[in-house]
Length: 197
Image (tube, rainbow, N blue to C red; front, top):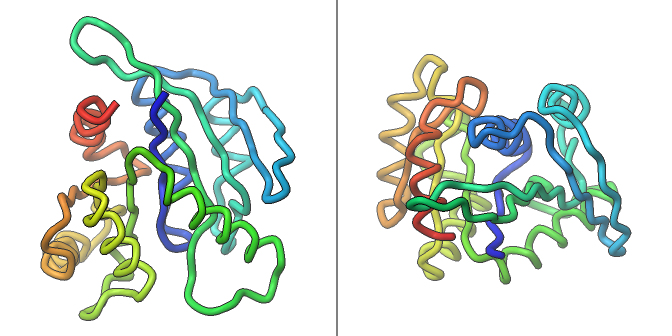
């Protein structure tokens, strides 16, 4: 089974995207497998709404370990299962909390083995240079040829202009505007996933 990893900076909407995308693919409930840095595995059975209430929030680094969901996507006349893994947000510098440092290390390690990468960037924070972390993820993903750049929060003011800036900052990326909150762009993401599973 192929694994799709969701990466990006903290608070870009990775967890919300994962849960709403699961709902978009037809899941009403999800079995979320959490894998800690020391390989402790726990599994939780939640509705999409319960998962959003418990796992999404405005606090930095709410996700501190890998969280995976097994989903199915239609490919031709069949359904193909794949693993969608949400990760700890990556940030510059050395974080002062050990759990966050370990979560980031876990994310970086998983990137090396993932079958394909969904890189989420918050369009409200795109500046002229782009962030160091986003540039590193972009360069790694483009070199691997299994990478999709998602400009999230396209529903917010100025996001369309920032999506144009994002596309020019990362010209080799296949970039899509999305809204994790309102499921905008999910049809295109689903088509990408179906081509790669």
